[in-house]
Image 1 (cartoon, helix red, strand yellow):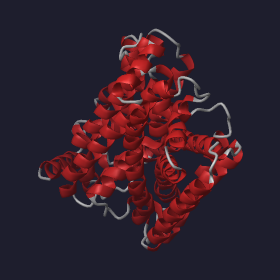
Image 2 (cartoon, helix red, strand yellow):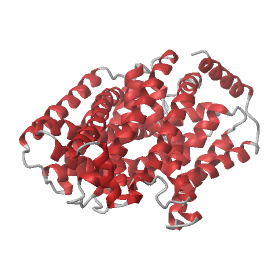
Image 3 (cartoon, rainbow, N blue to C red):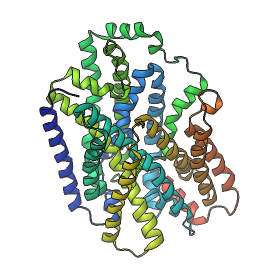
Length: 493
């Protein structure tokens, strides 16, 4: 717990009030469901890129990844390498094509909406199944963020877990409930900047305080030479599992929805440059924070490795600066939870309520359903987060794998393979999600069955997409024409 709390509390209050103010402004600009779940497709390059990065990384970037490096050394950086590769490929190939194709596919505003329109699915099975799977895995993902918030408030203010969970949840639910996608994107833009600065500043100041690179890395090596060994005793299966995290990018609705919301195709190249730079530099800062923590806290090891970032803010900085840096952790948590709540509520409003219950529902009615969907999903996630043994990395790992295996191959094949059909989409989606759930039940510590469930699910889903796309009728002429139109739009950006 931090000794001089007053400056930190003031900083937190100012930050939280600012986020709520953005929510109020966005509330006044939200009239339709398209505004609420996609911001009316009017995001600029900078907001789209930084909000995508911030909603992507969450508390995992400031708590989970540095904690993994602090606990196990450089070998854990394979996760960061895999994620960096996934982010680059996502921006390079998926962003433009998804932006163009969702516009061509009857101006789809959610992923389930896109899948239904892309494959001309009159049965609505794609919409319903994808919405169910989004709700399932996002509930776990949201819980991960709430656990991260609890770690922050417990470590900083000495609060018990219950109080910590509710304080963070109330603010996040508040501005997401009011402002929808615009509020989420604007706040994520600010939060992305905070996260980036925090991850650059802390490693630099920590190394300077310890006496420079030489003494720092000598101390890390002295504690355990394997701390600086990239292989670190990990075998091929381990490297594939860690690198496999990068496969998850293509199936994360809360990230790729930013591609759908970019103002125009001309904004894509600029957004790509900003987005890739943010991800690579931020993850490098997180890796360095964890590594340096091994040397810095050698005399007084941390009980919880996931608090290494928080510990640095408390020992290196003035309370006012510490307050800003701690606000960056809260920003990371908020930026992901708000996006996940919004995607989940859009699945309820657009894909269940409008798609299955009231097809002629008015826009204001749908926005209201979306807002109360935020409340319902948040309450379930809070209940899951009550488990005191839950860690940020474990919860994120499960949800990331579930979403990545369910939607990653589906998104890639639907964007780049003209021959894909509804049968292939449905088979791939179901098999990917089920594989993740089942693989965890048989997973072992070593050997082939220790492979990360995302890798297995991604491969199974891809195979099922190909097989079942050749079972049943081929794509219609309209589907093929839409594919070529989206391809041309992407090429001409």
